[in-house]
Length: 389
View 1 (cartoon, rainbow, N blue to C red):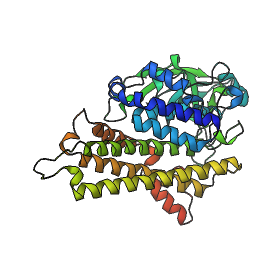
View 2 (view 1 turned 45 degrees about the vertical axis):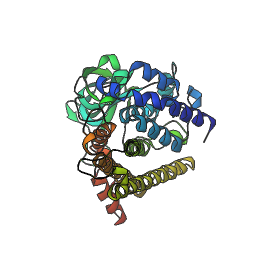
View 3 (view 1 turned 90 degrees about the vertical axis):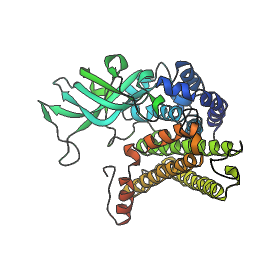
């Protein structure tokens, strides 16, 4: 762990109790409070992957997993929002080095948000620019982002252009200033409410070619391991958020047992119940296994990037299968803790109900769909499933 990485991790650990105490406020506002955002910026959370040449910290990837988990343990939505924001340079590194440097000229704490699903169209014009329009869901952190992006099907003369994959259209992400888009208040959901993952929309926005990039097939133009595996890094971070939420649920269950809580009709406290003890031990062991496997994969992907190797299709299938298993194992841990909490769990005053809603919102994400485990199995049979499972 580098000196810079330790500073960020220590700062986040110091900030965690404050975040935890404000969890209900964050959820009610359905976004990060601006003063808390300022504290997270000051802690270095959004410059972890930014090159030192642009004022960043270049934190080693395995440490960022611990940082994200620590934040998610304090509050799942905060962990998620920081996760999305800190990955900004991974996407911008898919643009030219010149444009990357221009975007980071004013601050290393640049934050973008947007949608990966190609729910827009970008008409290629004669001068090489694009006319973009579309509406994208799940734009986490859009309210505090200075730039927004949306993935688009590229068209020319009104028809989709052929892409690099036979039979598929060309897909490119369009980057535009936040004030050129409309944020639609759609994030009324069960869990991870504080992420502010509203829809965003644009209509006939002209985007220069230099402000476009290929999310799924592009390769970084900025050297260094910190930006080498954007998609795998982003997916592994989702697993870290899941582990953090499960860790919070486990801690809350242990605290509840310490109050000598006694379930209705029971003759002794829950802490004295062999069934409770078994469920608690099983949940804790499952969580340790999930964390260990996830961090092992993160270290493996990082070591490969440091060595200058690009992840193979088999590597990607294995890692995506791991992340999926970890997320769903984390959900089972939270379920067990919620059940163990008995009649107090459903109340808004119980952190366990928020953990339950947050983790089951996370498991709906496309990056942890159960089909990734099918893809991992398919890879073992010698077939590459890629990212399109």
